[in-house]
Image 1 (tube, rainbow, N blue to C red):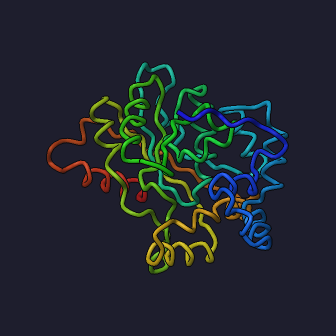
Image 2: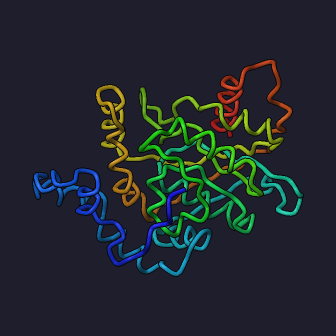
Length: 277
């Protein structure tokens, strides 16, 4: 596991990131491009928030994010969240329409309900956010993910924490005018059965900008890397002051996922259940 990043007045530093990634070649990156990257990453605004919230971590930090982004969360079906003291562990799965705001909001809701006893499976890069790190099990998507992923998942499901997962693996795309997740991966099904965890489906409202969806579709079709991810912080700031609807569905018993369908088919079954909420 990576060490948690240290909070400074310049925790996010594009210049240093470029030097770490490119070494001496970083000096050849045009300065207008560097300035543009800082603007798209909202370097100054993010650093100001990280510094101001440096005394918070975990759920407290997530709730500070919700307040900072001035998000209004309308939660329906909260009675479907299992009681914190029922002695069982659950897998919470949600669609991923926004790629950031939705994760923060759901972490705040579930984290408060279960007194911080939950964990995300997240991109290892997010471990650079010190306040988020205590509730994360990092996945190294910048390196040998296939080698690290099974161990991280195993650690999460063997822990005494509820799991919060976004089975699409990336934020929603728009096709033919409809915004929805790509097909879900099967990991949450197979592990929920293995560790006898019921699955709680959640639907989160919201959309990113038209620009983002056009860029994401271009990137997915034409580029060997996810260019759209670079713009997720900018999309987050476009979603400030908004109201989001969160619908919690009834838990699905783990015994539901029997041999009548394979795990991938069951994953799409739950995905449909989410979109039917």
